[in-house]
Each structure stands twice: as C-alpha cells, then as structure tokens.
Length: 120
Image 1 (cartoon, rainbow, N blue to C red):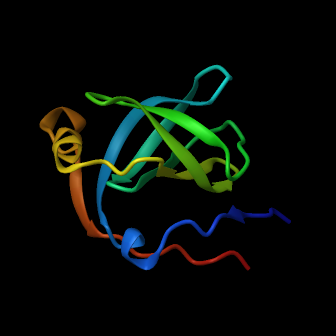
Image 2 (tube, rainbow, N blue to C red; image 1 turned 135 degrees about the vertical axis):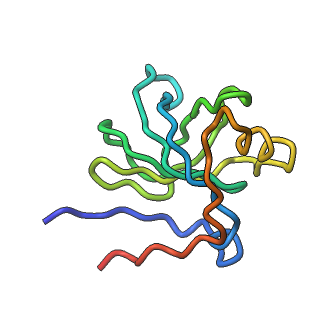
C-alpha cells in the first residue's frame, strides 16, 4: 500500500486561491542537491503542484525554477509517488503572477482551486 504524506500548512483561503493550469517543463531541487526535472501542472500565489519522478519527503525545502521569476523557494506539503505539491516560502505578488499569466507560459486560468481529498 502506498502511503501519501501531507503537511497541514495551507489554510482554507490559501487552498481556494486562483490557480493557473500550466504546462511547464522545468527543474526543481532540494537545497544542497542537484536539479531534477518536474512538469508543473498548476501554480497559484501560494504554491504549485506537478509531476516528478524524484521522491522527496515532506516538509523538504526546495527551489523550483519558474520562467521570468528565477528560482523560487518552497516547502513541500504533499509528496506521493510521481506527484509533488509545495507552498512558496514567500507568496507570489501580483506582478509575479502576471508574469506567470503571460502568453509565453501557455496558461489557462483555472479559477478557484478545490481542496484535495485528505489521505485515508
């Protein structure tokens, strides 16, 4: 049986922040370790989620590269085989979110996010 690991960092308002669906092939690294590939699938002012073959532990601190923003530090709040979610150490501001919404990011506004189901 696969064990899903979650951290309870997000509050309800954070989980409902506007998310942008993205198709972004980029890199992520745990601080002090080399970069690995990640396919980011959504991003909001408070965090991101994506698909990554590297296994990480919650609450690892990572640096994720976001085009136009550089490396952004985040704390992982969810880690499952092949899937990660992280909370940015510092929320993205409106200017940073506008960069993520630019045409070069190929985003589609997803609207308010729905909370993921808690682990059983």
